Length: 176
Image 1: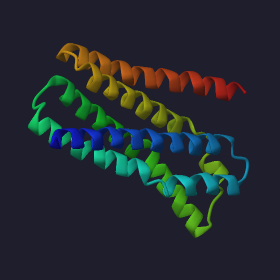
Image 2: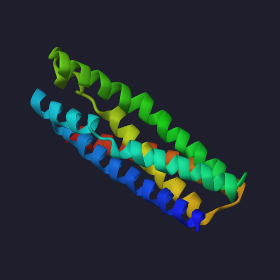
Image 3: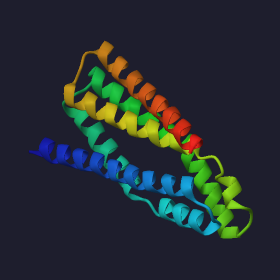
Image 4: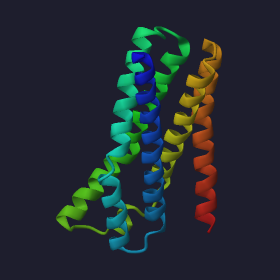
């Protein structure tokens, strides 16, 4: 019974992660189309008040660690899922969080032209595409539970799909 409750918490956490990514997609689209500082402030404010993804990440990670320790210890798909989770956190911290914190500080201090700061959102789009693609890859791993070789292929494919989609969409947006 405890395992089923933890599994429910785990799946709920993943749903919250996807919901958080959805809100972030909206914020990045708003930033990409922003023509004024006010529009940028609105998108950054929405993003910085976004705690749903953090709550979802904590629920997913903690419940996942419990399930891995009690039932699925050492399986390749669990290890690959943790690596993917780490890649999501690394990508978010490297590309998105730094940029949004700097923008929030600029807004708070009312200094600088935010349009110039967010003139090119390619790195933000790369970050969101990568994290979304990797999260789908992790869900695939958790569902299919493949052998080690396939785990590596799935994780690498998820990263590749994220990069390719980001580049293709950036090219399309930059042409418009």
